[in-house]
Length: 295
Image (tube, rainbow, N blue to C red):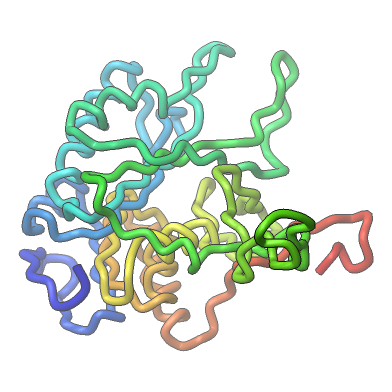
């Protein structure tokens, strides 16, 4: 899907631009924003919608009303998704009076009703968060990776991680003496360890629940090619936009909170200027038991 794309984009918020490294960011309702796109125009939809927890960027509703809203947004995302494209929906748990509701499970039938195929339920593990007193403290969220068909963009080599035993070789059989693993590294599996963005994280902004850029980078590298289109319909402060720009993808996003859109635009300017602070992909998780935290 690489190459020039045709879009019908609003001129009200951000002028249309032709450069693939210049994103289009809008302070606009996501349904209004997405309805201006052509069918099958997007290679990767990657987003983290509100969890209906009553954060300052959302209005808490009943779980049924929340799911109805999500259904409308998902339907529009599916319309935009290219036949070789991927959709990654990152959510946590909705909590009501101490009972948790796993939102990815609740949304599974919605995606399946559109004919999408679930490729992975990725577990994003992080070390810090709210400390619970009446249940175990939550330290993971999920990314549901869906595709439209069996023919989808997939670049495993771009996201391989160092092997645990890089020099390991077969000790018997027809391949004796040869390397037993891929010399480029191993598959990162479906459990990912990335620090969440707290106050000591280099990417911290005014948003209380922002994506770490390195998490989205892995999705962008694996599921798109250079020049492809990445869309985030719940953009927040633009971490998905940054991840796309860092790897020469076209980026489009929207949010209804003006302050978040302003921050996203500032981060894009800093990215273009080469001064944006991000946590590098592949940097080890800080370990206080090691010298310099293992860094």
